[in-house]
Length: 74
Image (cartoon, rainbow, N blue to C red):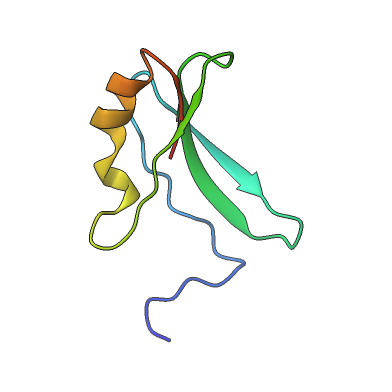
């Protein structure tokens, strides 16, 4: 399929900006998931999911604001 990434191709790095940290999670079957985390590790967790017409790149501003009060993962 045109434009489809293979498992061997690296995911593009998207700089999430100040206050957010990008991390790659490797699943047991070798697939990688790009995550962005922020906030206090001891606080409640808010998960922000991309989907429909909103890509993950839409979350940084909201995630930065929420991370002042909770852990965030997108």
